[in-house]
Length: 282
Image 1 (cartoon, rainbow, N blue to C red):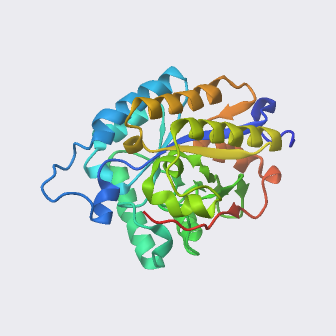
Image 2: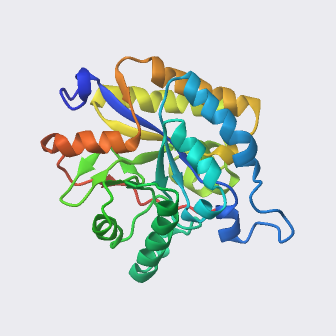
């Protein structure tokens, strides 16, 4: 086990993160009905308040990666997340498949989104690429705009001259288990194509946590409010959050705080980031 990487002798670092807000991704995919009302998505009106209560009960401060489009639609919800002590990160403009973008489009979407967040008096330090994969231009564009970190798919934390990498692993996100559209990714990772159930999610994520404790590593666990829609899934999320909050070997903090620690202790983290470029489609 690696020693001395984390504050107070903690064995591992974990960020609890949320992805996607409202209709943004559905609009991007052309899946939002033309006659449906914008601004009343169930993931914001129903799921998010419940998740915020659960996070509060577990005394966990999370990072919510939000599409920039939402700043003009769900500004109140974004402020409620921030006022509850959580971090807001950037997750594309409207959940574009980030790895397919050219540099000019990336730059334009970053600028447009940051302008929207600025109107909410938000300073954004972190970025998670929709789809989990960066382009060759992403890191330099983020550094140019003062971002501290990015959170693509990969294994363990790292830092280079420009930015901190705080990756998630596919088996650490709820969509990997629940989403029909992740069948190809599950197959690529050695699982069956069928969706998995909440108990399987808990078993796998518990195992991932144990691995990070053993290796002294970092991972981001990832939940989507639009998928947390029934009692079994909510219970599974509660079990994972309770484990993280009660295990005194784990440092659980918003991604920006972990990025700040790594920047201040960079000699323990200077390595090529271990990124995962396994593709998936919905």
